[in-house]
Length: 111
Image (tube, rainbow, N blue to C red; front, side, top):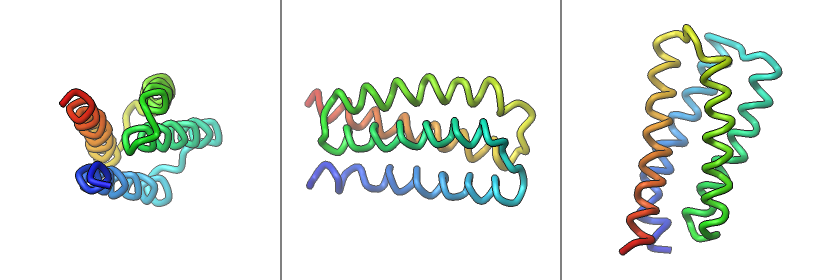
């Protein structure tokens, strides 16, 4: 319970920017079906990471992180070249939020 309270601001920031990214996709740049499927896989990976951080265990964190690295790398390499500045800014903040969530989990596990 304490872990969820401590991590909820970071998860909230992530969700805030994830919703902003979705809104950008609806009004500025509609992704292709392939990119949408990749985003679905990223979402599942992010849920696994978050669940692991909140207490489901290191295996979930590792699986979620592996999915984020693999699918996120493919997404950035194939689909995110020449993005509108607003979308690029949101992606940077989303990446930072994932990093912050993982860093807080590592600190918690090693205290």
